[in-house]
Image (cartoon, rainbow, N blue to C red; front, side, top):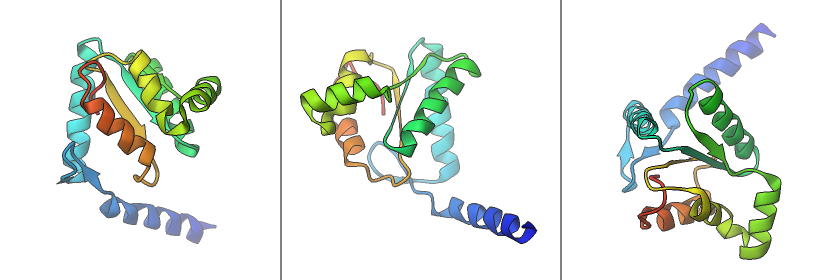
Length: 143
């Protein structure tokens, strides 16, 4: 059991150098710099009374929901997550799943809000589509 625990944490530590962080122009940023920039953005926009919007697919939806609650409860920030099953099934049925987050953001986001998209693969086409559409719209959040 002890060997399994040590192996688990060794593997976990080994993942950090493999994390890929990019900026809004898809240019590589070191992990510490990316985290610092993200934290500064969230803090500065929260001080301006903007909200943090979380999205996620599958297991990442659970993480997104949990994070929104923690930001609200523990951080005192206005945070929301678009993982409600009725919202997701309604929007995907009416518009198509590729628009499920885009439509929710169009309805609920305001300029200055921060969108936090959680993805274990980092390759979600729906996130890329949402990011491209919403960075061009002056009403929607920063991504």
